[in-house]
Image 1 (tube, rainbow, N blue to C red):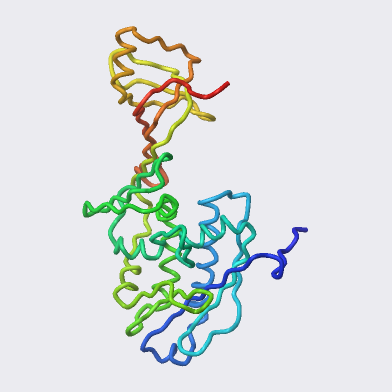
Image 2 (cartoon, one colour):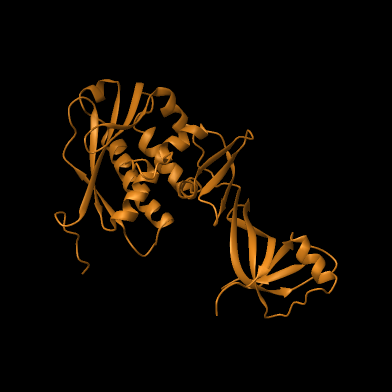
Length: 299
């Protein structure tokens, strides 16, 4: 049997979510049980999914609890987080926007989705040598965010959970207000009617294209002296994948026989990988070799 965490031994962080409106139910601190339970469930699922996306699926870094009944004023739900791995857990809560870490400021998931304002996300670009992601929107706007935040926004389930937390409980209510409060009950985030409506418009469809720039160590299984297409590389754990060679210096050195390539020669390859959704449950991956460098690892 798994050992249950001890609430008195683990580090803890508390935050609250508040719902308010010019509404008879909320003025009496009541909400439909199904709506409220879905919101609470979505908070827990959002935090769990963020933990999996940003860290290790096999390691739980924080656990979510609900504490104490709603307080006077508006309907408030109090959450208690057990930080099983405090450093990672605080990072996750910071990226989500439930807490603020002064040393690591971030736009936060809720504010980022508000900024996107219901526009369709066409592509998210990330790089393993850059700590930011670029979100390309349907109107041509580009938004730069923290790379961890970009990874979360790329998940359709993450966006769905945020809608369930913010807009569903306040749907069709007059002058709605959504707040996230910290442990001292000070406001971390406040959304008024226009903001709540923007979250309601968030698209939860699968993003059509995600592009990642990464550096790998791989060998070429197929080369083409006549074109920058028709090349293949061996990626770890995969069959040889087709790539377009965009490193013209490397291409011309091979073509002019200034450099030879043997099947088992390993290179340091800067790769761009684009994942596109081309149909129902159909994903297509395309690779570009941006640069080919000598293997610089120490044997």
